[in-house]
Image (cartoon, rainbow, N blue to C red; front, side, top):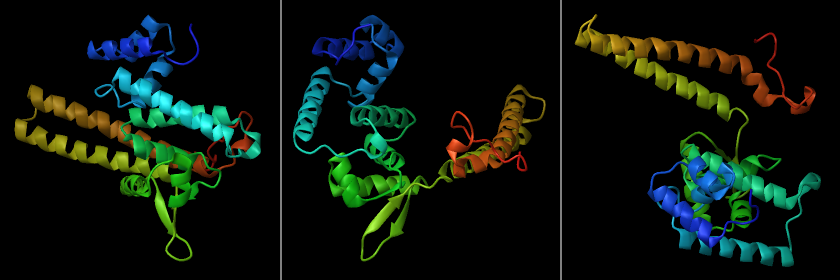
Length: 249
């Protein structure tokens, strides 16, 4: 497989593939590139509906120039002996994953930035410095993420705020998903009575309700059993995977 950066010619082929409705994997095979490379390229440059080869090429050139300048001046020191290039590449990959899950680009960048700090918290000024964006962009992203329950604010001395990602956020997200499923179940069963028990349409709704009932119960039970994992020391178990408390399992 060819390595190195994508060329302008390859970006044009990506744009044509997207226009033809090809999947990322198909485009990747035609270019002999990893699917992750194509996915990351498209998502960081507007997504499948807004991707433009010339704009993507110019954006890459700008990023390259910024990195060259930053390396030539004062590269931020990495804690724990981390490889700065590896951290930067991983940050872009993690951001792409969140974007594929539905988060807007700026919100995904802010969330990943918070997750990748050892403290799990940053101020607006620190986010501005790390992401090289305006304070207004950070404010908008934080408001969105806070509304989704993915971050919270802490007031520090004076008027300064610190933005925090809680370890418990994934548990809360699972519980919220379970509540949403419960609403669908209740509404589907209302339809059974209206459409007439025994009819094909009513049977379809009842099967949906039964399926979601089972999934919701399993999801809730598993979330409760595994909740301790979110607060455990990952070094406690060989391989870095903590196990739920046997009492709760």
